[in-house]
Length: 220
Image (cartoon, rainbow, N blue to C red):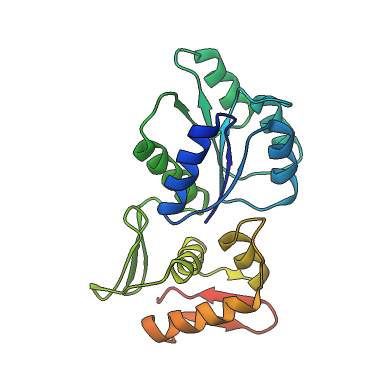
């Protein structure tokens, strides 16, 4: 899952980037509103953490421009303590949730998990596909109750497919959501990760849809 983090305070930006990456997310971080607007307009993100008090272009303007352009990714806005009017304005502009500074990183991660789940139609923090279970809180994957160790990229591919179960996901889409913008992306590596997942989980779950991509088929 790929996150856009927009926070102009350098220390907080670095802390949140580390926390998000440790939690298994791919992070594109920036420190001003104009760059954030440009990234959100051309790149694909599963969620955005957006501070409102930004240089060059304020967060509210960024959010309004995204929504006007039809960008629908979930947005969690960060507001200053007691700035209730910012919360109202943010929600009215199209934000999906808000968090008041200062906050606990664990709460931010929990709210992000919830936003991403709801955006893909999942209510529970544990995603299931037959005997496969993926706990988004702990990044733990089990098969018939047995823990299956996965590498970071294997987990990211599986998590994205499970969030979009039964949908066909192209290699390009997977690549965009498991690598940051400045990473040397290579969609051919997706085949490697899918092959490893099939060896660890079984070949019956991840289908290859010729010419289109992959589908995680939920057993009926």
